[in-house]
Image 1: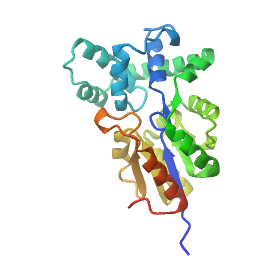
Image 2: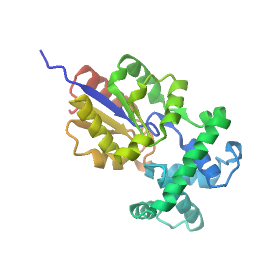
Image 3: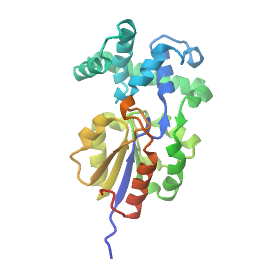
Image 4: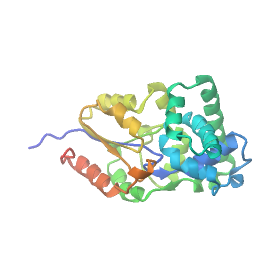
Length: 255
């Protein structure tokens, strides 16, 4: 008889389960004083189109501080290599500036949620992947962990509305990310704490995979329907769903 091993699925939120690019942009525009409310944000403007295009660069929310200013610069100077400029800026950030910005960003999101909930929620839409995943989470909630740099309360609100039955104690938001300092450290902690022997991590940001590459028996899979560079974008959700099902059923996912 095969030994029953403990297995787990680690999932990102933005860019894997939900498309929240419009929500992030609206919150940013209000936080930076460029709009008074959600209805005042122009989601057809070239500035938003550039934001959508380069959203794949973002990790923690403070990254938005640098992306926004570089989009302004690129619109004035189209030849700017925005990706290189962004990576240079985030490699040597100004912690005082971006931490102050991050507080304003999350406070603004809270205000939008509390005062304009329906409009705020309408900006966060589930990917088709969610419909396929829902039944698996419902049957095997103990095997799923959600690891995101988004604030936990907004994650829980969206999950409830869309009837995704993650165990609340398995949802790790920005608050835990700030304590552990990386998704890698959170995953490593959970593997050790729950004695997990085989697992899969699904994210859209390649940088997280580089960081997690040394974790043994962790399969790294990029959700390419999410926030990825245009040349890498594809719908590989059916393959990933099969990987998740195989893992849960105890089949080999490393072939």
